[in-house]
Image (cartoon, rainbow, N blue to C red; front, side, top):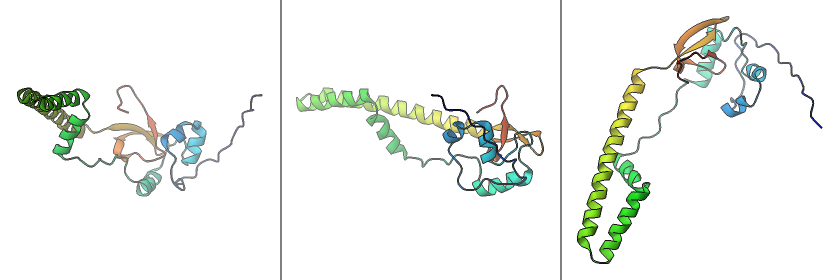
Length: 174
């Protein structure tokens, strides 16, 4: 027996209202319909937030940025790159077997080859990470937001706050 749909009426958001309590997760908001999310975030879809409301939310929830993870030391990254590569571990195992049977030359050759290949791969990966970080800092993320009674404004994505109505266009980075 199907459950009948129940229409829920949400009160119109008050100007300058800020959601109370902790915000839900993205997946919890995604499971709700649009009107429920707008009601929970105290925002009007047509008018967007006011400058005062956006400022209050920024003070309450902070900037729209991800906190950078702690950087591992280069030595720890190198060891991790070796320890997570099954082919390298297999070759190091074969070097250990060579030592066990007394083939020191083979063990040395295998170990040296593994270290050279691992070092070259590590250096290339490190350089690509540095290049990606430099490119990311050169191109700031912009977005189109509905605020101040329905005006569409172009602003930095770092300035978004919970409840902002974002308009997506072709070519936008999400």
